[in-house]
Length: 56
Image (cartoon, rainbow, N blue to C red; front, side):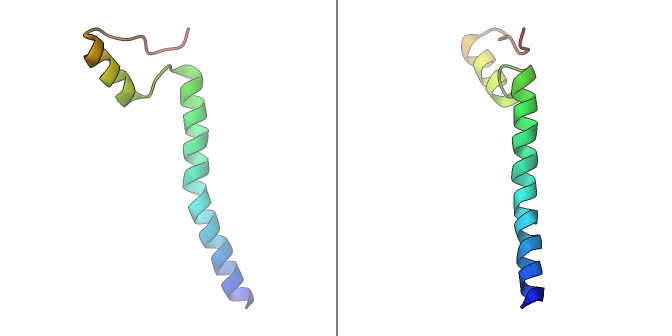
């Protein structure tokens, strides 16, 4: 039983790690930039001019 429990724990950590790292990266990114890169490209194309990218 302990072996199965360890397997589930390690699988849970493998599932949690990508979400946690994506959340940490997202928080860092949005602290420094107004938009994500694709959203910035989309807004710049829609408005016909470069939109501000960095937070001031």
